[in-house]
Every structure is written in structure tokens, then in C-alpha cells.
Amino acid sequence: MDIKRILVPTDFSETARAALDQALFLAARYDAELTVLHARLLFEDDPAELEHKLKDLKAEEKEVEHALLDKLRKKTADHSHLNIKHEIIRGYSAPSAILGYINNKEFDLVVIGTHGRSGLEHFLIGSVAEKVVRYARCPVLTVRSAEYIKEKFEKILVPLDFSEPAMHALKTAANWVEEEGGELHLLYAVEQEVHPALYAWGMKSVFDMIPDIKEKVEKRMEEAIAQIPKLKKVAVKKVIREGKPHKVIAKYVEEEKPHLIVIGTHGMVGLDRFLLGSTTERVIRAVKIPVLTVKNKNVI
Image (cartoon, rainbow, N blue to C red; front, side, top):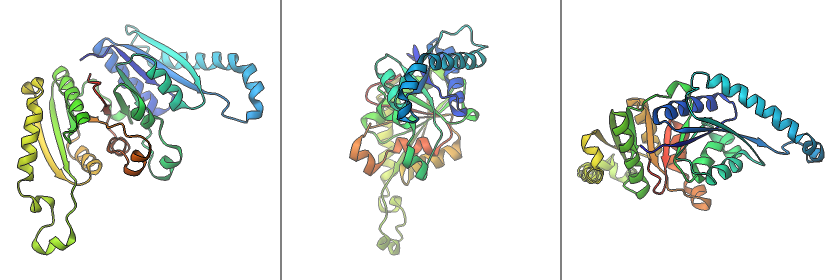
């Protein structure tokens, strides 16, 4: 594993505290430098108060910095041996400020809390974590609850669709499993609806329509595993299920209780993402366990 620099943005919420705790575990395990980042939003109130805001900016910055330091001291009191830094940045929105900082630095991993919003609230205000996942250049670990953080991820789930991002995710998972020990679960979701007209013929599942589909997918799984030498020493469980990927993944998490999901993201933006959505983002909203997203060739 090559994790030397970790960033954890914080807004002092419960999920941000959970993300910090997870980041501390990782920083200790990999002897990594940990940067704790707080983004202050400028002029979020009445624009007429702009002059007042400018006059008080330095005083407010010191106040926030003191609050941040106090919170950090409490959270890191037992981690004085770690290399921990803190940064305060200013911006007009949390996502843009955080992403600007991330993409101008060389971080190996970002750990960020996510509130798991869904429905209308998510549509209206979105999610800072999801924007970071979508646009950050490095892998991002989202953390939703302190209940599910781990010192070691010994049971890792990789949703596999054989795409390039999925293969990068598999390589990352192989590195983590080799380092942490434990087992790896590969999950493939067959997303193909059966036309109701075929029900009369006894075909209620894609597995009825294509009897050898499991055999074909398992063969491709074996081929994918063979491309990664590290997996020869790892216990790998191969699972094939029918349904929409994000729903299949969420159900599998409930049943098997893995510690971590490692998933590739295609990084879709604009109209494609708006129309099609993102399996990765839906998974992040649907599950409570940490999710590590990998894009491009950023294997860790």
C-alpha cells in the first residue's frame, strides 16, 4: 500500500467526526501525514454585509482556527505520535473550496463524511461528499457512521462490471486485502429485464433466459483475478446476482456485512450523469459502511 498523504475535510458534524476517526486509523497504520481541512464559506449571508464581513474576516478566521484547534486537540489527544496538520481555507461553496485544495495538492487519499441524503433534499442541495467523489483526482473514502469504521478492513466487497474503472478498483482492493489480510468478495449484477410475455414460458429471470450466463460471468471473473498476481494468495468469493447494480450491492451488504466497498467510478459529468445517474453515488447513499471510490489509474 502506498498511502503517504491523507486529507480529511471536516465541518465538525457527526459524520465528519467519524471520517476523522477512520482517517486517524489509516494514518497510524500506514504512517501517513494527515491534513485536516476546514472550509469557511464567505459572504453566505446578506451581500449588503460585504464590507462588514471584510473588516471582520481576520477576527473570524482566528476564531474559527481556535475552534478547529480545540476540536482537533480533543480528537487527536491519543495520536500525538502522528504527523497531523490543519488547514483553513475560504471559498464560496464547500465543494469548490475543498476540490480546489485537493486538486492543487498531491494527496493519496481523501476521507470524507457523507450524510446519506436522498430524495428531494438530495436533489435540491446535493452532497458535498458526492461532488468530491465525482471530481477529485485521487481515491476518496466516504464514511457515513462511526459504527462502521474499522482499524482493519478484513472483508472487502468489489462490485465488478469488467470496465477499466472496475479493474482499477479490483487492483486497489487486492492491495488492501494483501496488506490487511482477510477475504475479497466480487459481485456482478446482471441488469437485464425479462419481458412479461416470456413469463408464460417459465422465464421469470435472466438466468432462465440465458442458462449459461453464470458460467460465462464466472469465467470472466477468473480471467480478471488472473490479471492480478496478488489475488493468488487471497480468498476470493465470486457472486452473481440479478437486478439493478446499486440495489444488488445494497442488499448484499445487508446480508454479508462486508467492512468496505471498493468501487470504480466512470466519472460521468453533465447530461450523461444527470440522465443516467451514477451507480457509485447511489451506493454511497444506500449503504452505511465506508465506500472507497477509485477512478482512472489512481490505484493505492
